[in-house]
Length: 256
Image (cartoon, rainbow, N blue to C red):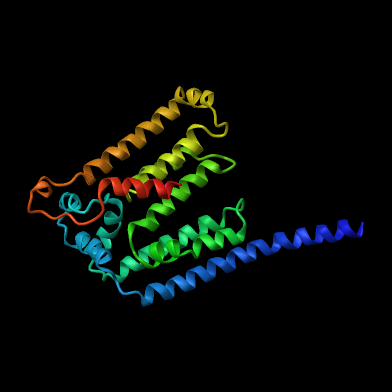
């Protein structure tokens, strides 16, 4: 009896400690990230995204500039309004900071993972520095992808919200495309029973066809944003950056 009572007391105290630990990790993440952003000097590619958004005369002009960038439009659209309101480049840091807090909240709320694993993920070099301190489209894509996954893994699925988030993620970064495809296949198409019978049955559902149409539309918009401008194929044009096969290889690695 004493063992049962002590174990019950331990479990109840552990349940009370977990929310407190989650809030402590969230607060530490927010404070340290704010310090990192305040001390970080804007890199050239970060400033370029802000300048493209600021100096584009309308959305069509912005779309034309992006054909030389090789990135979808959502991050630039997010920067477009504050850039045209005359705000400084620090506004881009503030936007990325808020998005980073959203990711931390989504990750720390996933109680199927241990708190230590969730904290290790948030404070990893790639998430904390490459995505949080550096203001690039990666953090926005991560929030949309994690949000979509949590919508599909929730007790009460929010499938349409998940599809909208995946469609937006596709138009945030090229790396998000294979990850969005993985979430769509594993968590929506074949879940909860990973079998061909389940997959074939799901194809016949009207909601599935609508979801495929939405994802297909997002991919089409992404393609017309990413396709290079005609003059980039000229012999005297130098296109910096990684090749398409390289992007695909990294994207598959991110998916894994």
